[in-house]
Image (cartoon, rainbow, N blue to C red; front, side):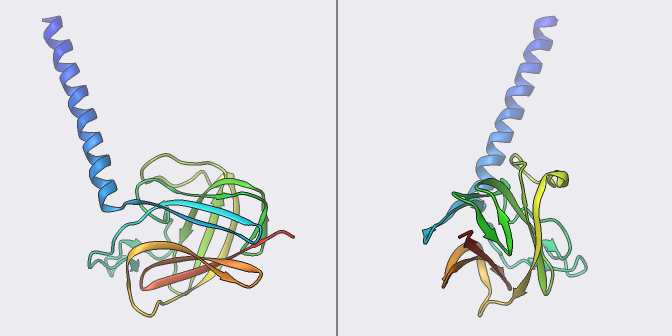
Amino acid sequence: MRKKILLAIAVLVIGFAGYIAYLLLNTRSHSPAETAEHNEDGLNINVSYCRPYKKERVIFGTEEDGALQPYGAYWRTGANEPTKITFGESVIFNGEKIDAGTYSFYTVPGQKEWTVALNSAIAKWGYSEPDYSKEIHRSKVLADKPESPVEQFTITFEPQGNHVNMVLAWDNAIVKIPVSPTS
């Protein structure tokens, strides 16, 4: 009897592990991993994130609109794993000095402006709000609309003279965060 119970438990554990592996692999194919990099003019920036698709959904808006990402709510700024940003040296990130290192990057989208934040705690896979006590930066940036809707979430870098804009674009929203060298 004891062997049957142990065997049943083993089968359940293996089945559960297989199910989790299936979910991880299946989810990642819907929101593939990507790296955005900028390595010029004394700025070495690397952003690791996952790129979900719009798929005819309302992405940003109110809960009443059925938005996937409601205004005023935490967003890990991608899918699957939390978005991570690494600065190779100290930078000025949206007006504030940030030391070199790797941080969680997340946002709180709004209709006309977004909150952008950096956190020293790097969360694991999945959706979970950060430990806000470890936040090292929080600021606002203006939100705009792209010329046409963006199907897949994208982070790019756009050089602008003595700084670079980190550009977040998805659906009907585009946000530009200025990053410059400290010197």
